Image 1 (cartoon, one colour):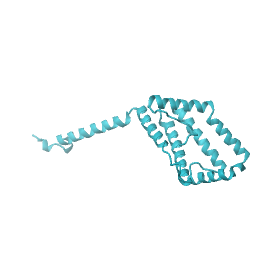
Image 2: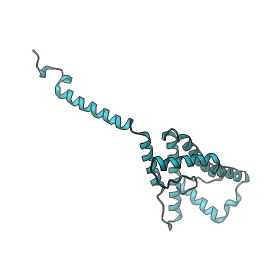
Image 3: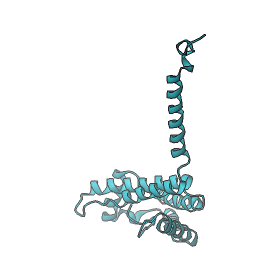
Image 4: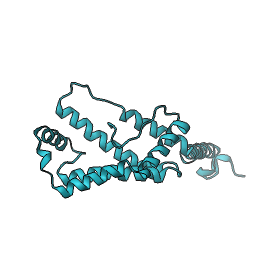
Amino acid sequence: MSSASSAPAWRRPQVLAITGIVVIALLAGTWFFVLRDGRSAYCDDLKSWVNKSKETIAPDADLATSAKALAEGIDRRIDGAKKFSKEGPDDLRADWKLFHQRLVDVVEVFKKVGYDLTDSASIEKFATDVQSGALNNIDPALQAEAAAVQEKLADDESTKAIDAITKDAEENCGIADFQLSPTATP
């Protein structure tokens, strides 16, 4: 007759009990992370993004501090819009994708003009050039391109996308006074 202690190690009651507990814990963890409500996760991420975007700088902040905050804010808006265009609710992904593209278009046209809106030093230079009047010397073709990008920000397609995202944020995520605008302070 064989005893319990002569059973292979993997068949001993203690090992089987521990293995069962580990399997149950893994299944519960997988259920929590994989089957978590997609809308709930989206709303949590959106609330976090909105709260981070609402951070402001002191009105008396120097140019370097303001430029850094603006560059970080633009990066955050672009990254968030890109994320939501891929991971947001199915019915909003196209709207987020359009919003993301409009933001990228603005950044790209500024780069063509000579300013990187995601770089604080470049934003400082832009502010200095605005004050000195140096922006009056921009190539007319680039001015026309910048005007076209600005028009796209306010066209019907952009307005509908922003309205859909805003309405969903307020109705389904409970974010009061949600404002999504490419021109809003990030």
